[in-house]
Amino acid sequence: MSRGTETLVFQGRVPQSQWPVMRAPFQEGDFPGPVKYGYLNVGVVEAGVPELVGRTVFSLFPHQTRFVVPASAVTVVPAGVPAARAVLTGTVETAVNAVWDAHPQIGDRITVVGGGMVGASVAAVLAGLPATDVELIDIDPTRADLAKSLDIRFRQPADATVDRDLVIHASATEQGLTTALNILRTEGTVVELSWFGDKRISLPLGENFHSKRLTIRSSQVGGIQPQRHRDYAERLAVALDLLTDPRFDALITGHSDFGDLPAVLPRIADGSLPALCHVIDYPVN
View (spheres, helix red, strand yellow):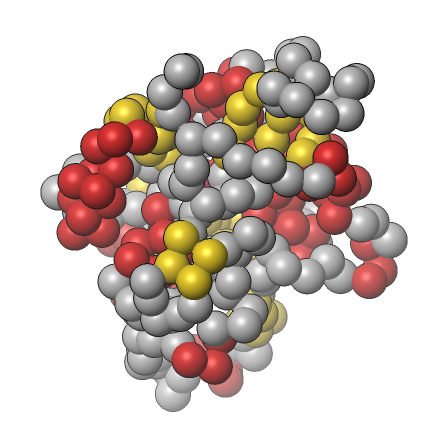
C-alpha cells in the first residue's frame, strides 16, 4: 500500500482541482468516491505474451486479486529482487525522482525529514553517495531502528543537525516542513516530497526564509526533469536495480490478507496500525 496517498483517497481528501492528476492507472470510479484505487502490485503472469508467462512482474493496478493489462503495463522483476521487496518499486522510483530533482553533490550534508516509506527510501538512496553525510529525522523514536538498518544516522527534531546543504521533506506535516527550513544553511534548498491533499499549512516565512535566501521546490513522481534525458521505463529500471540491496527489506513492516483489507485500511488511515510498507497478500487460488 502507498500509505500516504491511499489514506488521503480513502478519507476523501483529494482536492477537486487534482482529480484528473491523481487518477491511478486503471482506476475505476471517480473522485471523491467510490473509487477502486491503489497501484503497487507484484505478481506472476498467468497468460498472455509467451515470454512473460510465469515471470514475476511489477505493475500498477488497483487492489484486485487478478487483472488483465497490456504487456506494456508490466515490468519483469530482476532475479536479484525478491517479489516481497519488489512491491517497493514504485516508492523507490519516487525516491529516485526526488534525488534527481534535488541535485545532491558528493560530500553534501543532507537531511531527510520524515521517516515513512518514502522518506526512508530517499535516505537509503542518498546514503549510497560517496562521502555524503545523511541524517534521518522523525518524531517517532522507534524510527532509530529503521535508520540503523539503513546505515543512516537518526535524530529527533529537537536534536537535528543544522547548517544542512539540502533537506528532503517527506513528513506531510507543517511542523516537519518548518524543521526542514530551520536546519538549512544559507542558500540551502528544501525539496518537498509530501502531498498535503486538501490541507492548508502555515510556514515561518517571515523569519530566516528571506534573510538566508532559502528555496522550497516540489518534487512529484509524475514528471521527470527534461535535462535528465530519461524516460519512465528507464527510471523504473533504476529503482529495480537499487532494490537488489537487502537494506530495503526494513521498510516492509507488515502483511494482511486481501480479504481483511476493509478492516485494515481504516486502521492504517487513523494510525492505530503503525506501518511503513504494509503488504496486502492476494490469495493464490
